[in-house]
Image 1 (cartoon, helix red, strand yellow):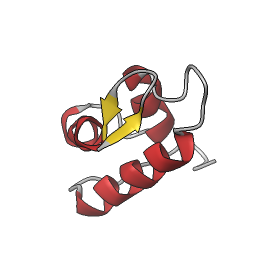
Image 2 (tube, rainbow, N blue to C red):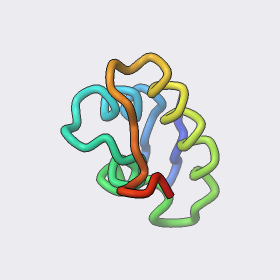
Image 3 (tube, one colour):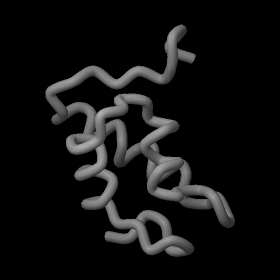
Length: 68
């Protein structure tokens, strides 16, 4: 299913990015994909998909040095 219509980003692409990127920062992953850079209505769904993928991912995601 498409998460970001503006950029044509699917749930699968977000899930793949979680497992294939060297960064474990959610903001960096979404920024690299271009999610939310246009209208922004997809951000909530994209973050949900990202967190769901994280639950199945073998590494811990961190939002930054202070987890903020």
